[in-house]
Image (cartoon, rainbow over all chains, first blue to last red; front, top):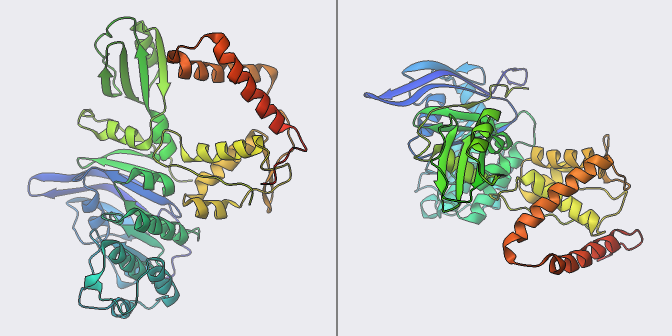
Length: 313
Length: 138
């Protein structure tokens, strides 16, 4: 089955839950990743991103819930499905005793379709030589080799678990270029997790934010930034205590100012702020990183959702 | 290509707005003239290493403002100068921009007269650049 005729999302996750012992690592995750998009998966370390990805890849068994990858149940992977999905595991693992060329020949043996042009283009992009021993490569070069091995079978769906981890800025740029190159074809989908929000801002169409096993946002980057906003209230005297607002994730006071970071600020919230009788209220755009840190930082204890399931067009 | 755009991800300004601002600046500085093509969405996305949808959004915003024209199948071109906004809307935007400017200089302790002279100079410089026939080849 070529999958070209496949409709529906690239990945559909319904109520996916995972316990390790008594600890809930992923909690009731619902998520749909449309075909043809570059999807950024964000969250702090330990948020449950890798466990989610490993469940999707059929490596970890879900405790509850289901997920479909290209329309197939994620607990029943077939060799045909493996051919259509490229998975780059966290950490850029390679067989150190093989040369770059040997790694390619070894991996190619598992696939019916293997595009050597792509393999060579990617290793060239990362300045790798075929005779180099994989064990002697730098982190960035290893990432390049792993990426070449993942891209050569021309997968419809790429799942990259923290591909930029440990890469220098030049290697990171090469990685982003490769990701954009892959999605030139409209039906190619990428799911990648990352902590580098400026990279995510460059390439991602949509993001999901996980925090302590729970999905806390699922929207476009612009939506996220538009909905996590900061308000600077200026006072003649010392500002009062921050108001109790449902969407307040972060507050900060100085002598004359109070900065409130609010999610989904409503007219009611604005009325409460005006009610504090500040001299002026200024609404500030936050960068993606600022918005993210406010949103999942320690003060963001309250759980609410930036949920926008209208993701599918 | 006379149009040189640069972006800085991770800032307070979304990337699509940085791209649109870059095109606006190029038009104001006379680096591009009506009829000049914008780079293709795909090519600019690859050059800047950003998602093509981000570039598309910037171009769509510019088209909505009447600064560029979309020609089906051919791409985007710098439009003839025209004013898409009503008098009231232009005044509203002017007041918003003045507010931002005044906030930015509020604590620099300049008297209004001291602010006006560099402002007038800069405005006259911008006007001179906008005059047709002054297109800079460099």
